[in-house]
Image 1 (tube, rainbow, N blue to C red):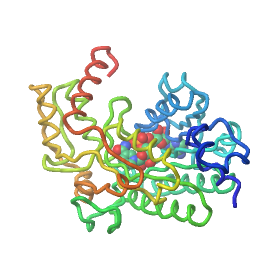
Image 2: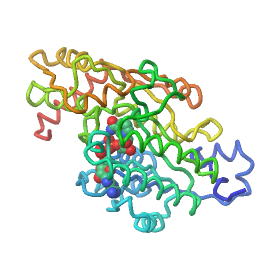
Image 3: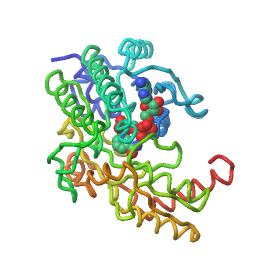
Image 4: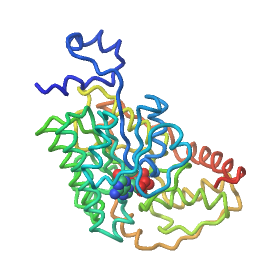
Length: 351
Ligand code: NAD
Protein backbone atom coordinates (compact mmCIF):
# COMPACT_ATOMS: atom_id res chain seq x y z
CA UNK A 1 0.00 0.00 0.00
CA UNK A 2 1.28 3.45 -0.85
CA UNK A 3 2.33 5.57 2.08
CA UNK A 4 0.46 8.67 0.91
CA UNK A 5 -2.84 6.85 0.73
CA UNK A 6 -2.70 6.53 4.49
CA UNK A 7 -3.20 10.28 4.65
CA UNK A 8 -6.39 10.21 2.68
CA UNK A 9 -8.57 11.07 5.66
CA UNK A 10 -6.51 14.09 6.62
CA UNK A 11 -9.50 16.38 5.98
CA UNK A 12 -11.39 14.88 8.91
CA UNK A 13 -10.63 16.68 12.19
CA UNK A 14 -7.78 14.94 14.02
CA UNK A 15 -9.77 13.96 17.10
CA UNK A 16 -12.60 12.43 15.10
CA UNK A 17 -10.16 10.61 12.90
CA UNK A 18 -8.49 8.94 15.86
CA UNK A 19 -11.86 7.90 17.19
CA UNK A 20 -13.01 6.49 13.87
CA UNK A 21 -9.94 4.99 12.31
CA UNK A 22 -7.53 2.76 14.16
CA UNK A 23 -5.05 2.95 11.28
CA UNK A 24 -4.13 6.44 12.35
CA UNK A 25 -2.81 5.30 15.71
CA UNK A 26 0.22 3.70 14.11
CA UNK A 27 0.72 6.17 11.24
CA UNK A 28 2.96 9.23 11.43
CA UNK A 29 0.70 12.31 11.45
CA UNK A 30 1.27 15.33 9.27
CA UNK A 31 -0.23 18.08 11.40
CA UNK A 32 -0.67 20.98 9.02
CA UNK A 33 -2.06 20.78 5.54
CA UNK A 34 -0.38 23.01 2.97
CA UNK A 35 -2.61 24.01 0.11
CA UNK A 36 -1.70 25.65 -3.17
CA UNK A 37 -4.18 27.46 -5.42
CA UNK A 38 -3.29 28.13 -9.07
CA UNK A 39 -5.29 30.81 -10.88
CA UNK A 40 -5.57 32.59 -7.51
CA UNK A 41 -6.06 36.00 -9.13
CA UNK A 42 -8.95 34.76 -11.29
CA UNK A 43 -12.69 35.07 -10.77
CA UNK A 44 -13.00 31.89 -8.71
CA UNK A 45 -9.43 31.54 -7.42
CA UNK A 46 -9.41 34.98 -5.79
CA UNK A 47 -12.39 34.12 -3.59
CA UNK A 48 -11.53 30.44 -3.09
CA UNK A 49 -8.03 31.35 -1.81
CA UNK A 50 -9.49 33.71 0.79
CA UNK A 51 -12.12 31.13 1.84
CA UNK A 52 -9.42 28.46 2.23
CA UNK A 53 -7.18 30.86 4.17
CA UNK A 54 -10.04 31.63 6.53
CA UNK A 55 -10.55 27.91 7.09
CA UNK A 56 -6.98 26.61 7.22
CA UNK A 57 -4.90 29.71 8.13
CA UNK A 58 -3.31 32.29 5.82
CA UNK A 59 0.21 30.82 5.90
CA UNK A 60 -1.07 27.37 4.92
CA UNK A 61 -2.61 28.46 1.61
CA UNK A 62 -0.13 29.44 -1.10
CA UNK A 63 -1.63 31.61 -3.83
CA UNK A 64 -0.12 31.21 -7.28
CA UNK A 65 -0.65 33.98 -9.81
CA UNK A 66 0.65 34.75 -13.27
CA UNK A 67 0.01 37.95 -15.24
CA UNK A 68 -3.13 39.28 -13.56
CA UNK A 69 -2.46 41.69 -10.67
CA UNK A 70 -3.37 40.23 -7.25
CA UNK A 71 -5.61 42.23 -4.91
CA UNK A 72 -4.11 43.73 -1.75
CA UNK A 73 -6.24 41.34 0.31
CA UNK A 74 -4.77 38.34 -1.51
CA UNK A 75 -1.21 39.68 -1.11
CA UNK A 76 -1.61 40.56 2.55
CA UNK A 77 -3.38 37.42 3.75
CA UNK A 78 -0.73 34.77 2.96
CA UNK A 79 2.10 33.69 0.63
CA UNK A 80 1.86 34.70 -3.04
CA UNK A 81 4.10 33.33 -5.81
CA UNK A 82 4.24 34.00 -9.53
CA UNK A 83 4.49 30.77 -11.52
CA UNK A 84 3.76 29.72 -15.09
CA UNK A 85 1.75 26.53 -14.55
CA UNK A 86 2.94 25.29 -17.93
CA UNK A 87 6.41 24.99 -16.42
CA UNK A 88 6.62 21.87 -14.25
CA UNK A 89 10.01 22.72 -12.69
CA UNK A 90 8.76 26.11 -11.44
CA UNK A 91 5.65 24.49 -10.01
CA UNK A 92 7.71 21.77 -8.36
CA UNK A 93 9.98 24.36 -6.70
CA UNK A 94 6.97 25.99 -5.02
CA UNK A 95 5.50 22.63 -3.99
CA UNK A 96 8.86 21.74 -2.38
CA UNK A 97 9.44 25.17 -0.86
CA UNK A 98 6.15 25.08 1.08
CA UNK A 99 5.82 21.29 1.43
CA UNK A 100 2.47 21.47 -0.38
CA UNK A 101 0.22 18.38 -0.13
CA UNK A 102 -3.00 19.62 -1.77
CA UNK A 103 -3.47 21.59 -4.99
CA UNK A 104 -6.53 23.44 -6.25
CA UNK A 105 -5.71 23.87 -9.92
CA UNK A 106 -7.84 26.72 -11.29
CA UNK A 107 -5.52 28.32 -13.86
CA UNK A 108 -6.96 27.93 -17.36
CA UNK A 109 -7.98 29.69 -20.53
CA UNK A 110 -11.78 29.88 -20.65
CA UNK A 111 -14.30 29.19 -23.42
CA UNK A 112 -14.58 32.52 -25.25
CA UNK A 113 -10.87 33.42 -24.95
CA UNK A 114 -10.02 29.82 -25.83
CA UNK A 115 -11.95 30.07 -29.11
CA UNK A 116 -9.80 33.12 -30.03
CA UNK A 117 -6.64 31.07 -29.45
CA UNK A 118 -7.42 27.31 -29.46
CA UNK A 119 -3.73 26.30 -29.61
CA UNK A 120 -2.95 28.20 -26.41
CA UNK A 121 -6.11 26.80 -24.78
CA UNK A 122 -4.96 23.23 -25.48
CA UNK A 123 -1.36 23.86 -24.39
CA UNK A 124 -2.21 25.72 -21.19
CA UNK A 125 -5.21 23.68 -20.05
CA UNK A 126 -3.82 20.23 -20.85
CA UNK A 127 -0.14 20.97 -20.15
CA UNK A 128 -0.80 22.43 -16.71
CA UNK A 129 -3.18 19.65 -15.66
CA UNK A 130 -0.69 17.02 -16.80
CA UNK A 131 2.09 18.77 -14.82
CA UNK A 132 0.00 18.81 -11.68
CA UNK A 133 -1.14 15.19 -11.96
CA UNK A 134 2.47 14.14 -12.54
CA UNK A 135 3.60 16.10 -9.46
CA UNK A 136 0.83 14.41 -7.48
CA UNK A 137 1.96 10.99 -8.71
CA UNK A 138 5.68 11.57 -8.17
CA UNK A 139 5.41 13.27 -4.79
CA UNK A 140 2.40 11.36 -3.43
CA UNK A 141 0.35 14.53 -2.88
CA UNK A 142 -2.73 14.04 -0.73
CA UNK A 143 -5.41 15.53 -2.96
CA UNK A 144 -5.99 17.55 -6.15
CA UNK A 145 -8.99 19.67 -7.13
CA UNK A 146 -9.55 20.46 -10.79
CA UNK A 147 -12.70 22.12 -12.15
CA UNK A 148 -14.31 20.85 -15.30
CA UNK A 149 -17.23 22.69 -16.87
CA UNK A 150 -20.63 22.35 -18.53
CA UNK A 151 -18.53 23.02 -21.66
CA UNK A 152 -17.83 19.25 -21.80
CA UNK A 153 -21.29 18.98 -23.36
CA UNK A 154 -22.07 19.88 -26.96
CA UNK A 155 -24.85 20.37 -29.50
CA UNK A 156 -25.79 16.66 -29.53
CA UNK A 157 -26.10 16.40 -25.72
CA UNK A 158 -29.64 16.43 -24.23
CA UNK A 159 -30.02 20.06 -23.07
CA UNK A 160 -32.65 19.68 -20.37
CA UNK A 161 -31.63 18.17 -17.03
CA UNK A 162 -28.40 17.01 -18.68
CA UNK A 163 -27.40 13.71 -17.06
CA UNK A 164 -24.10 12.97 -15.35
CA UNK A 165 -23.25 10.42 -18.01
CA UNK A 166 -24.28 11.40 -21.51
CA UNK A 167 -22.93 12.46 -24.92
CA UNK A 168 -19.84 14.63 -24.53
CA UNK A 169 -18.83 15.99 -27.94
CA UNK A 170 -18.09 19.67 -27.31
CA UNK A 171 -17.85 22.28 -30.06
CA UNK A 172 -15.12 24.40 -28.43
CA UNK A 173 -11.42 23.76 -27.78
CA UNK A 174 -12.10 24.69 -24.14
CA UNK A 175 -14.69 21.91 -23.98
CA UNK A 176 -12.26 19.49 -25.64
CA UNK A 177 -9.66 20.26 -22.93
CA UNK A 178 -12.28 19.70 -20.22
CA UNK A 179 -13.37 16.31 -21.64
CA UNK A 180 -9.73 15.24 -22.08
CA UNK A 181 -8.94 16.60 -18.61
CA UNK A 182 -11.73 14.56 -17.03
CA UNK A 183 -10.40 11.43 -18.72
CA UNK A 184 -6.86 12.21 -17.57
CA UNK A 185 -7.98 12.73 -13.96
CA UNK A 186 -9.92 9.48 -14.05
CA UNK A 187 -6.84 7.70 -15.42
CA UNK A 188 -4.47 9.04 -12.74
CA UNK A 189 -6.95 8.04 -10.07
CA UNK A 190 -7.38 4.50 -11.41
CA UNK A 191 -3.77 3.87 -12.41
CA UNK A 192 -1.79 5.70 -9.73
CA UNK A 193 -4.27 6.20 -6.88
CA UNK A 194 -4.10 10.02 -7.15
CA UNK A 195 -7.06 11.41 -5.19
CA UNK A 196 -8.21 13.94 -7.77
CA UNK A 197 -11.67 15.43 -7.47
CA UNK A 198 -13.58 17.61 -9.89
CA UNK A 199 -16.80 19.52 -10.52
CA UNK A 200 -18.43 20.54 -13.78
CA UNK A 201 -19.04 24.15 -12.81
CA UNK A 202 -21.89 25.95 -14.56
CA UNK A 203 -21.51 29.72 -15.20
CA UNK A 204 -20.27 31.31 -11.97
CA UNK A 205 -21.69 34.67 -10.87
CA UNK A 206 -19.73 36.79 -8.39
CA UNK A 207 -19.28 40.32 -7.08
CA UNK A 208 -15.54 40.50 -6.28
CA UNK A 209 -13.35 39.66 -9.31
CA UNK A 210 -14.66 40.09 -12.87
CA UNK A 211 -14.70 36.92 -15.01
CA UNK A 212 -11.86 36.21 -17.42
CA UNK A 213 -13.38 35.39 -20.81
CA UNK A 214 -16.15 32.78 -20.52
CA UNK A 215 -19.45 32.47 -22.41
CA UNK A 216 -21.48 33.11 -19.24
CA UNK A 217 -19.68 36.41 -18.45
CA UNK A 218 -22.84 38.36 -19.45
CA UNK A 219 -24.56 37.12 -16.30
CA UNK A 220 -21.92 38.95 -14.22
CA UNK A 221 -21.39 42.02 -16.42
CA UNK A 222 -25.12 42.75 -16.42
CA UNK A 223 -25.06 43.42 -12.65
CA UNK A 224 -21.98 45.69 -12.86
CA UNK A 225 -23.44 47.69 -15.74
CA UNK A 226 -26.90 47.89 -14.14
CA UNK A 227 -25.32 49.51 -11.07
CA UNK A 228 -22.90 51.75 -12.96
CA UNK A 229 -24.86 52.78 -16.09
CA UNK A 230 -28.41 51.39 -15.73
CA UNK A 231 -27.97 49.92 -19.22
CA UNK A 232 -26.43 46.73 -20.59
CA UNK A 233 -25.94 45.29 -24.07
CA UNK A 234 -26.08 41.53 -23.67
CA UNK A 235 -24.04 39.34 -26.05
CA UNK A 236 -26.57 36.48 -26.07
CA UNK A 237 -30.27 36.43 -27.03
CA UNK A 238 -32.93 37.25 -24.46
CA UNK A 239 -34.24 33.65 -24.52
CA UNK A 240 -30.83 32.06 -23.87
CA UNK A 241 -31.10 29.75 -20.86
CA UNK A 242 -27.94 28.46 -19.16
CA UNK A 243 -27.15 26.81 -15.82
CA UNK A 244 -25.51 29.20 -13.32
CA UNK A 245 -24.29 29.21 -9.75
CA UNK A 246 -23.62 31.99 -7.23
CA UNK A 247 -20.08 32.20 -5.87
CA UNK A 248 -20.91 31.20 -2.25
CA UNK A 249 -22.38 27.96 -3.64
CA UNK A 250 -19.36 27.49 -5.90
CA UNK A 251 -17.00 27.79 -2.91
CA UNK A 252 -19.21 25.51 -0.82
CA UNK A 253 -19.42 22.80 -3.50
CA UNK A 254 -15.63 22.90 -3.96
CA UNK A 255 -14.74 22.73 -0.28
CA UNK A 256 -17.48 20.16 0.49
CA UNK A 257 -16.22 17.85 -2.26
CA UNK A 258 -12.60 18.23 -1.15
CA UNK A 259 -13.52 17.51 2.46
CA UNK A 260 -15.82 14.59 1.67
CA UNK A 261 -14.78 11.26 3.10
CA UNK A 262 -12.97 9.29 0.35
CA UNK A 263 -15.55 6.50 0.62
CA UNK A 264 -18.25 8.94 -0.54
CA UNK A 265 -16.42 10.19 -3.61
CA UNK A 266 -17.45 7.68 -6.27
CA UNK A 267 -16.08 9.47 -9.31
CA UNK A 268 -12.74 11.03 -10.08
CA UNK A 269 -13.56 12.55 -13.45
CA UNK A 270 -15.99 15.32 -12.43
CA UNK A 271 -19.42 15.66 -10.85
CA UNK A 272 -22.32 17.60 -12.40
CA UNK A 273 -23.30 20.41 -10.00
CA UNK A 274 -26.13 22.88 -10.47
CA UNK A 275 -27.33 26.02 -8.77
CA UNK A 276 -30.08 27.56 -10.90
CA UNK A 277 -31.12 28.07 -14.54
CA UNK A 278 -32.62 31.22 -16.08
CA UNK A 279 -32.78 33.08 -19.38
CA UNK A 280 -30.92 36.34 -20.00
CA UNK A 281 -34.34 38.03 -20.13
CA UNK A 282 -35.40 36.61 -16.76
CA UNK A 283 -32.12 37.83 -15.26
CA UNK A 284 -32.69 41.36 -16.61
CA UNK A 285 -36.27 41.31 -15.27
CA UNK A 286 -35.05 40.28 -11.80
CA UNK A 287 -32.54 43.16 -11.77
CA UNK A 288 -35.31 45.58 -12.84
CA UNK A 289 -37.17 44.73 -9.60
CA UNK A 290 -34.29 46.46 -7.75
CA UNK A 291 -33.34 49.08 -10.38
CA UNK A 292 -36.60 49.98 -12.21
CA UNK A 293 -34.88 52.26 -14.76
CA UNK A 294 -32.51 49.45 -15.89
CA UNK A 295 -32.66 48.67 -19.62
CA UNK A 296 -31.10 45.67 -21.32
CA UNK A 297 -30.79 45.15 -25.08
CA UNK A 298 -29.47 42.10 -26.90
CA UNK A 299 -26.79 41.93 -29.59
CA UNK A 300 -25.68 38.29 -29.91
CA UNK A 301 -22.08 37.71 -31.05
CA UNK A 302 -19.91 34.58 -31.60
CA UNK A 303 -20.62 33.46 -28.02
CA UNK A 304 -24.28 32.78 -28.89
CA UNK A 305 -23.26 29.67 -30.81
CA UNK A 306 -21.32 28.38 -27.80
CA UNK A 307 -24.24 29.14 -25.45
CA UNK A 308 -26.65 27.33 -27.80
CA UNK A 309 -24.48 24.19 -27.62
CA UNK A 310 -24.52 24.02 -23.80
CA UNK A 311 -27.13 22.55 -21.44
CA UNK A 312 -30.03 24.64 -20.18
CA UNK A 313 -30.25 22.72 -16.91
CA UNK A 314 -28.16 20.09 -15.16
CA UNK A 315 -29.01 16.88 -13.30
CA UNK A 316 -26.72 16.90 -10.26
CA UNK A 317 -28.43 14.07 -8.39
CA UNK A 318 -25.26 12.00 -8.10
CA UNK A 319 -23.39 14.82 -6.31
CA UNK A 320 -26.40 15.22 -3.99
CA UNK A 321 -26.50 11.48 -3.30
CA UNK A 322 -22.76 10.80 -2.95
CA UNK A 323 -21.50 13.70 -0.83
CA UNK A 324 -24.60 15.70 0.05
CA UNK A 325 -24.42 18.62 -2.42
CA UNK A 326 -27.22 21.18 -2.05
CA UNK A 327 -27.15 24.77 -3.34
CA UNK A 328 -28.37 27.65 -1.19
CA UNK A 329 -29.07 30.42 -3.72
CA UNK A 330 -31.68 30.96 -6.42
CA UNK A 331 -32.08 33.85 -8.89
CA UNK A 332 -34.04 35.99 -6.39
CA UNK A 333 -31.69 35.58 -3.40
CA UNK A 334 -28.55 35.87 -5.55
CA UNK A 335 -29.77 39.07 -7.25
CA UNK A 336 -30.62 40.70 -3.91
CA UNK A 337 -27.14 39.89 -2.59
CA UNK A 338 -25.30 40.93 -5.79
CA UNK A 339 -27.11 44.30 -5.96
CA UNK A 340 -26.43 44.95 -2.28
CA UNK A 341 -22.70 44.13 -2.54
CA UNK A 342 -22.07 45.95 -5.84
CA UNK A 343 -24.07 49.03 -4.78
CA UNK A 344 -21.88 49.34 -1.69
CA UNK A 345 -18.69 49.02 -3.74
CA UNK A 346 -20.03 51.60 -6.20
CA UNK A 347 -20.89 54.02 -3.38
CA UNK A 348 -17.35 53.52 -1.97
CA UNK A 349 -15.87 54.32 -5.41
CA UNK A 350 -14.50 50.78 -5.77
CA UNK A 351 -16.41 49.49 -8.78
P1 NAD B 1 -10.17 33.25 -14.78
O1 NAD B 1 -9.96 33.43 -16.24
O2 NAD B 1 -10.87 34.33 -14.05
O3 NAD B 1 -8.78 32.98 -14.09
C1 NAD B 1 -7.84 32.09 -14.63
C2 NAD B 1 -6.50 32.42 -14.03
O4 NAD B 1 -5.51 31.59 -14.66
C3 NAD B 1 -6.07 33.88 -14.24
O5 NAD B 1 -6.00 34.55 -13.01
C4 NAD B 1 -4.69 33.78 -14.89
O6 NAD B 1 -3.74 34.63 -14.28
C5 NAD B 1 -4.29 32.31 -14.64
N1 NAD B 1 -3.36 31.85 -15.67
C6 NAD B 1 -3.50 31.93 -17.01
N2 NAD B 1 -2.40 31.42 -17.62
C7 NAD B 1 -1.55 31.01 -16.64
C8 NAD B 1 -0.27 30.41 -16.62
N3 NAD B 1 0.38 30.10 -17.75
N4 NAD B 1 0.29 30.14 -15.42
C9 NAD B 1 -0.34 30.43 -14.27
N5 NAD B 1 -1.58 30.98 -14.22
C10 NAD B 1 -2.16 31.28 -15.39
O7 NAD B 1 -10.89 31.83 -14.57
P2 NAD B 1 -12.00 31.40 -13.49
O8 NAD B 1 -13.31 31.86 -13.99
O9 NAD B 1 -11.59 31.78 -12.13
O10 NAD B 1 -11.97 29.81 -13.68
C11 NAD B 1 -11.21 28.96 -12.83
C12 NAD B 1 -11.43 27.53 -13.28
O11 NAD B 1 -12.82 27.20 -13.22
C13 NAD B 1 -10.98 27.23 -14.72
O12 NAD B 1 -10.46 25.93 -14.80
C14 NAD B 1 -12.28 27.29 -15.49
O13 NAD B 1 -12.22 26.50 -16.66
C15 NAD B 1 -13.26 26.73 -14.48
N6 NAD B 1 -14.65 27.16 -14.74
C16 NAD B 1 -15.00 28.45 -14.54
C17 NAD B 1 -16.31 28.85 -14.79
C18 NAD B 1 -16.76 30.28 -14.57
O14 NAD B 1 -17.92 30.60 -14.83
N7 NAD B 1 -15.91 31.17 -14.08
C19 NAD B 1 -17.25 27.90 -15.25
C20 NAD B 1 -16.83 26.60 -15.47
C21 NAD B 1 -15.53 26.23 -15.19
